[in-house]
Length: 302
Ligand SMILES: C[S@@+](CC[C@H](N)C(=O)[O-])C[C@H]1O[C@@H](n2cnc3c(N)ncnc32)[C@H](O)[C@@H]1O
Image (cartoon, rainbow, N blue to C red; front, side, top):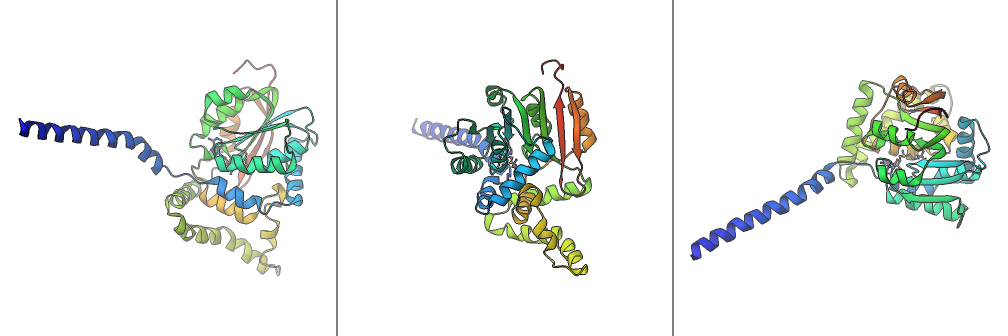
Protein backbone atom coordinates (compact mmCIF):
# COMPACT_ATOMS: atom_id res chain seq x y z
CA UNK A 1 0.00 0.00 0.00
CA UNK A 2 2.82 2.30 1.08
CA UNK A 3 4.87 1.29 -2.00
CA UNK A 4 1.83 1.98 -4.21
CA UNK A 5 1.33 5.48 -2.79
CA UNK A 6 5.05 6.27 -3.24
CA UNK A 7 4.94 5.26 -6.90
CA UNK A 8 1.63 7.15 -7.29
CA UNK A 9 3.25 10.20 -5.81
CA UNK A 10 6.25 9.79 -8.10
CA UNK A 11 3.95 9.47 -11.11
CA UNK A 12 2.00 12.55 -10.12
CA UNK A 13 5.26 14.46 -9.49
CA UNK A 14 6.43 13.51 -12.97
CA UNK A 15 3.07 14.55 -14.46
CA UNK A 16 3.22 17.89 -12.61
CA UNK A 17 6.80 18.42 -13.80
CA UNK A 18 5.71 17.66 -17.39
CA UNK A 19 2.82 20.13 -17.07
CA UNK A 20 5.23 22.81 -15.82
CA UNK A 21 7.57 22.08 -18.73
CA UNK A 22 4.70 22.20 -21.22
CA UNK A 23 3.46 25.48 -19.76
CA UNK A 24 6.96 26.93 -19.97
CA UNK A 25 7.54 25.70 -23.52
CA UNK A 26 5.80 28.48 -25.43
CA UNK A 27 7.45 31.07 -23.17
CA UNK A 28 10.85 29.47 -23.70
CA UNK A 29 10.27 29.38 -27.45
CA UNK A 30 9.22 33.02 -27.35
CA UNK A 31 12.21 33.94 -25.24
CA UNK A 32 14.47 32.31 -27.80
CA UNK A 33 13.05 34.48 -30.61
CA UNK A 34 15.57 37.25 -30.89
CA UNK A 35 14.31 40.80 -31.29
CA UNK A 36 16.12 44.09 -31.23
CA UNK A 37 15.23 46.48 -28.38
CA UNK A 38 14.55 49.50 -30.61
CA UNK A 39 13.35 51.59 -27.68
CA UNK A 40 16.72 51.70 -25.93
CA UNK A 41 18.38 52.93 -29.14
CA UNK A 42 15.67 55.58 -29.64
CA UNK A 43 16.04 56.73 -26.04
CA UNK A 44 19.75 57.36 -26.65
CA UNK A 45 18.93 59.08 -29.96
CA UNK A 46 16.51 61.46 -28.23
CA UNK A 47 19.35 62.64 -26.01
CA UNK A 48 20.96 64.04 -29.20
CA UNK A 49 17.78 65.55 -30.63
CA UNK A 50 18.11 69.18 -31.66
CA UNK A 51 15.84 71.74 -33.29
CA UNK A 52 17.89 71.33 -36.45
CA UNK A 53 17.13 67.58 -36.59
CA UNK A 54 13.44 68.19 -36.04
CA UNK A 55 13.34 70.73 -38.87
CA UNK A 56 15.12 68.24 -41.15
CA UNK A 57 12.62 65.51 -40.27
CA UNK A 58 9.77 67.94 -40.98
CA UNK A 59 11.30 68.95 -44.30
CA UNK A 60 11.89 65.36 -45.43
CA UNK A 61 8.32 64.37 -44.56
CA UNK A 62 6.78 67.35 -46.35
CA UNK A 63 9.07 66.89 -49.35
CA UNK A 64 8.21 63.23 -49.96
CA UNK A 65 4.50 63.79 -49.35
CA UNK A 66 4.67 66.75 -51.70
CA UNK A 67 2.73 68.76 -49.16
CA UNK A 68 4.09 71.18 -46.59
CA UNK A 69 0.74 71.67 -44.86
CA UNK A 70 -1.05 68.79 -43.23
CA UNK A 71 -3.62 71.01 -41.51
CA UNK A 72 -6.94 69.21 -41.12
CA UNK A 73 -5.51 65.82 -42.08
CA UNK A 74 -5.14 62.75 -39.91
CA UNK A 75 -1.76 61.04 -39.71
CA UNK A 76 -1.08 57.53 -38.43
CA UNK A 77 2.54 56.89 -37.41
CA UNK A 78 2.92 53.10 -37.41
CA UNK A 79 5.93 51.97 -35.35
CA UNK A 80 6.68 55.54 -34.31
CA UNK A 81 10.06 54.70 -32.69
CA UNK A 82 11.42 57.91 -31.13
CA UNK A 83 8.27 59.82 -32.14
CA UNK A 84 10.31 62.27 -34.23
CA UNK A 85 8.12 61.91 -37.33
CA UNK A 86 4.93 62.18 -35.29
CA UNK A 87 6.31 65.44 -33.97
CA UNK A 88 7.17 66.52 -37.52
CA UNK A 89 3.65 65.70 -38.74
CA UNK A 90 2.07 67.47 -35.77
CA UNK A 91 4.17 70.55 -36.47
CA UNK A 92 2.98 70.45 -40.08
CA UNK A 93 -0.55 70.69 -38.71
CA UNK A 94 -1.81 67.09 -38.80
CA UNK A 95 -3.89 65.33 -36.15
CA UNK A 96 -1.54 62.54 -35.15
CA UNK A 97 -1.98 59.03 -33.80
CA UNK A 98 1.32 57.30 -32.98
CA UNK A 99 1.81 53.74 -31.87
CA UNK A 100 4.61 51.25 -31.37
CA UNK A 101 4.75 47.76 -29.91
CA UNK A 102 7.82 48.58 -27.81
CA UNK A 103 6.88 50.27 -24.50
CA UNK A 104 10.19 52.18 -24.45
CA UNK A 105 9.36 53.68 -27.87
CA UNK A 106 5.91 54.64 -26.59
CA UNK A 107 7.59 56.34 -23.62
CA UNK A 108 9.98 58.19 -25.99
CA UNK A 109 7.11 59.46 -28.16
CA UNK A 110 5.12 60.49 -25.06
CA UNK A 111 8.16 62.41 -23.78
CA UNK A 112 8.42 64.26 -27.10
CA UNK A 113 4.73 65.03 -27.00
CA UNK A 114 5.07 66.29 -23.45
CA UNK A 115 8.07 68.42 -24.40
CA UNK A 116 6.66 70.01 -27.57
CA UNK A 117 2.86 69.64 -27.41
CA UNK A 118 1.92 69.15 -23.75
CA UNK A 119 -1.69 68.02 -23.22
CA UNK A 120 -2.41 68.38 -26.91
CA UNK A 121 -5.65 66.54 -27.79
CA UNK A 122 -4.53 66.36 -31.43
CA UNK A 123 -1.66 63.97 -30.71
CA UNK A 124 -2.29 60.50 -29.27
CA UNK A 125 0.42 57.99 -28.41
CA UNK A 126 -0.45 54.37 -27.66
CA UNK A 127 1.17 50.99 -27.39
CA UNK A 128 0.02 48.48 -30.01
CA UNK A 129 1.14 46.13 -32.70
CA UNK A 130 0.49 46.51 -36.40
CA UNK A 131 -0.12 42.74 -36.39
CA UNK A 132 -2.94 43.05 -33.84
CA UNK A 133 -6.09 43.15 -35.98
CA UNK A 134 -8.38 44.09 -33.10
CA UNK A 135 -6.19 47.02 -32.05
CA UNK A 136 -5.99 48.33 -35.63
CA UNK A 137 -9.73 47.98 -36.16
CA UNK A 138 -10.28 50.17 -33.10
CA UNK A 139 -8.19 53.14 -34.26
CA UNK A 140 -10.08 53.80 -37.49
CA UNK A 141 -8.71 55.04 -40.80
CA UNK A 142 -6.41 57.96 -41.61
CA UNK A 143 -5.67 60.37 -44.46
CA UNK A 144 -1.98 59.57 -44.24
CA UNK A 145 -0.56 56.29 -42.99
CA UNK A 146 3.17 56.44 -42.40
CA UNK A 147 5.26 53.33 -41.74
CA UNK A 148 8.92 54.15 -42.21
CA UNK A 149 11.31 51.27 -41.65
CA UNK A 150 8.80 49.30 -39.59
CA UNK A 151 7.01 46.55 -41.49
CA UNK A 152 10.20 44.59 -42.27
CA UNK A 153 10.90 44.36 -38.51
CA UNK A 154 7.55 42.88 -37.49
CA UNK A 155 8.41 39.24 -38.26
CA UNK A 156 5.48 39.05 -40.72
CA UNK A 157 6.09 41.79 -43.28
CA UNK A 158 3.44 40.92 -45.88
CA UNK A 159 0.73 40.63 -43.24
CA UNK A 160 1.84 43.99 -41.83
CA UNK A 161 1.71 45.46 -45.36
CA UNK A 162 -1.87 44.27 -45.67
CA UNK A 163 -2.70 45.65 -42.23
CA UNK A 164 -1.45 49.18 -42.94
CA UNK A 165 -3.37 49.25 -46.22
CA UNK A 166 -6.57 48.69 -44.26
CA UNK A 167 -5.94 51.86 -42.19
CA UNK A 168 -5.83 54.22 -45.20
CA UNK A 169 -9.01 56.23 -45.69
CA UNK A 170 -10.54 56.30 -49.17
CA UNK A 171 -8.43 58.53 -51.35
CA UNK A 172 -5.76 58.60 -48.64
CA UNK A 173 -2.01 58.17 -48.79
CA UNK A 174 0.31 55.41 -47.68
CA UNK A 175 3.95 56.33 -47.13
CA UNK A 176 6.18 53.29 -46.64
CA UNK A 177 9.87 52.58 -46.38
CA UNK A 178 10.90 48.95 -46.76
CA UNK A 179 14.38 47.46 -46.92
CA UNK A 180 15.69 46.85 -50.39
CA UNK A 181 16.21 43.19 -51.27
CA UNK A 182 19.94 42.88 -52.00
CA UNK A 183 19.82 39.13 -52.65
CA UNK A 184 22.60 37.17 -50.91
CA UNK A 185 23.87 40.31 -49.11
CA UNK A 186 20.47 40.68 -47.40
CA UNK A 187 20.68 37.05 -46.28
CA UNK A 188 24.16 37.59 -44.82
CA UNK A 189 23.00 40.70 -42.96
CA UNK A 190 19.97 38.82 -41.68
CA UNK A 191 22.38 36.32 -40.12
CA UNK A 192 24.51 39.08 -38.59
CA UNK A 193 21.44 40.77 -37.09
CA UNK A 194 20.16 37.51 -35.64
CA UNK A 195 23.57 36.79 -34.05
CA UNK A 196 23.63 40.34 -32.64
CA UNK A 197 20.25 39.90 -30.99
CA UNK A 198 21.10 36.44 -29.65
CA UNK A 199 24.45 37.59 -28.21
CA UNK A 200 24.59 38.59 -24.52
CA UNK A 201 24.35 42.38 -24.17
CA UNK A 202 27.96 42.75 -22.99
CA UNK A 203 29.26 40.96 -26.07
CA UNK A 204 27.23 42.67 -28.78
CA UNK A 205 30.08 45.05 -29.55
CA UNK A 206 31.98 42.02 -30.94
CA UNK A 207 29.49 42.06 -33.81
CA UNK A 208 28.71 45.77 -33.85
CA UNK A 209 32.25 47.13 -34.25
CA UNK A 210 33.33 44.93 -37.21
CA UNK A 211 29.95 45.56 -38.85
CA UNK A 212 30.35 49.32 -38.38
CA UNK A 213 33.85 49.10 -39.91
CA UNK A 214 32.48 47.07 -42.85
CA UNK A 215 29.75 49.67 -43.35
CA UNK A 216 31.84 52.79 -43.01
CA UNK A 217 35.53 52.07 -43.69
CA UNK A 218 35.21 52.12 -47.53
CA UNK A 219 33.38 55.47 -47.45
CA UNK A 220 35.88 56.98 -45.00
CA UNK A 221 38.80 55.79 -47.12
CA UNK A 222 37.21 57.27 -50.24
CA UNK A 223 36.76 60.57 -48.40
CA UNK A 224 40.41 60.54 -47.39
CA UNK A 225 41.62 59.72 -50.92
CA UNK A 226 39.66 62.69 -52.19
CA UNK A 227 41.74 64.82 -49.76
CA UNK A 228 38.81 65.45 -47.54
CA UNK A 229 38.29 64.72 -43.92
CA UNK A 230 37.56 61.00 -43.35
CA UNK A 231 34.35 62.00 -41.55
CA UNK A 232 32.96 64.22 -44.34
CA UNK A 233 30.23 61.79 -45.44
CA UNK A 234 29.65 60.55 -41.88
CA UNK A 235 28.80 64.09 -40.80
CA UNK A 236 26.31 64.49 -43.62
CA UNK A 237 24.80 61.03 -43.18
CA UNK A 238 21.27 61.00 -41.88
CA UNK A 239 20.98 64.74 -42.39
CA UNK A 240 18.08 64.22 -44.74
CA UNK A 241 15.75 62.71 -42.12
CA UNK A 242 17.28 64.29 -39.04
CA UNK A 243 18.81 60.97 -37.99
CA UNK A 244 22.23 60.30 -36.48
CA UNK A 245 24.75 58.01 -38.24
CA UNK A 246 25.76 56.08 -35.11
CA UNK A 247 22.16 55.32 -34.04
CA UNK A 248 21.43 54.31 -37.64
CA UNK A 249 24.32 51.80 -37.54
CA UNK A 250 23.08 50.27 -34.29
CA UNK A 251 19.55 50.17 -35.70
CA UNK A 252 20.82 48.51 -38.90
CA UNK A 253 23.09 45.93 -37.24
CA UNK A 254 20.59 45.01 -34.54
CA UNK A 255 17.31 45.49 -36.43
CA UNK A 256 15.80 42.01 -36.23
CA UNK A 257 13.40 40.42 -37.26
CA UNK A 258 14.50 41.45 -40.72
CA UNK A 259 12.81 41.04 -44.10
CA UNK A 260 13.18 42.89 -47.36
CA UNK A 261 11.39 43.26 -50.68
CA UNK A 262 11.96 44.29 -54.26
CA UNK A 263 10.15 47.43 -55.39
CA UNK A 264 8.20 45.62 -58.14
CA UNK A 265 6.83 43.09 -55.61
CA UNK A 266 5.71 45.85 -53.25
CA UNK A 267 4.11 47.82 -56.05
CA UNK A 268 2.25 44.77 -57.42
CA UNK A 269 1.00 43.95 -53.90
CA UNK A 270 -0.57 47.40 -53.47
CA UNK A 271 -1.89 47.76 -57.01
CA UNK A 272 -3.91 44.59 -56.34
CA UNK A 273 -5.36 46.34 -53.28
CA UNK A 274 -6.51 49.45 -55.12
CA UNK A 275 -3.46 51.69 -54.66
CA UNK A 276 -1.56 53.65 -57.27
CA UNK A 277 2.17 54.23 -56.92
CA UNK A 278 2.71 57.99 -56.97
CA UNK A 279 6.33 58.10 -56.00
CA UNK A 280 9.18 55.64 -55.58
CA UNK A 281 12.63 56.42 -54.26
CA UNK A 282 14.91 53.46 -54.83
CA UNK A 283 18.01 52.96 -52.69
CA UNK A 284 20.84 50.79 -53.76
CA UNK A 285 22.60 48.79 -51.09
CA UNK A 286 21.28 48.47 -47.56
CA UNK A 287 18.86 51.38 -47.49
CA UNK A 288 15.07 51.46 -47.55
CA UNK A 289 13.08 52.00 -50.72
CA UNK A 290 10.39 54.64 -50.16
CA UNK A 291 6.90 54.36 -51.60
CA UNK A 292 4.13 56.90 -51.81
CA UNK A 293 0.89 55.14 -52.67
CA UNK A 294 -2.53 56.69 -53.14
CA UNK A 295 -5.65 54.74 -52.39
CA UNK A 296 -8.23 54.94 -55.11
CA UNK A 297 -11.38 56.54 -53.73
CA UNK A 298 -13.53 54.28 -55.91
CA UNK A 299 -11.94 50.98 -54.83
CA UNK A 300 -14.25 48.57 -53.01
CA UNK A 301 -13.92 48.41 -49.22
CA UNK A 302 -11.05 46.18 -48.18
C1 LIG B 1 13.65 51.22 -37.46
S1 LIG B 1 12.45 51.71 -36.31
C2 LIG B 1 11.61 53.00 -37.22
C3 LIG B 1 11.01 54.06 -36.34
C4 LIG B 1 10.32 55.22 -37.04
N1 LIG B 1 9.24 54.80 -37.89
C5 LIG B 1 11.28 56.07 -37.82
O1 LIG B 1 11.12 56.24 -39.01
O2 LIG B 1 12.20 56.61 -37.22
C6 LIG B 1 11.27 50.39 -36.33
C7 LIG B 1 10.18 50.54 -35.31
O3 LIG B 1 9.16 49.58 -35.58
C8 LIG B 1 8.64 49.14 -34.35
N2 LIG B 1 7.92 47.87 -34.56
C9 LIG B 1 8.43 46.65 -34.84
N3 LIG B 1 7.45 45.74 -34.92
C10 LIG B 1 6.28 46.40 -34.69
C11 LIG B 1 4.91 46.00 -34.62
N4 LIG B 1 4.54 44.73 -34.81
N5 LIG B 1 3.97 46.94 -34.37
C12 LIG B 1 4.33 48.24 -34.16
N6 LIG B 1 5.61 48.67 -34.18
C13 LIG B 1 6.58 47.76 -34.45
C14 LIG B 1 9.88 49.03 -33.47
O4 LIG B 1 9.57 48.97 -32.10
C15 LIG B 1 10.63 50.27 -33.88
O5 LIG B 1 10.31 51.37 -33.08
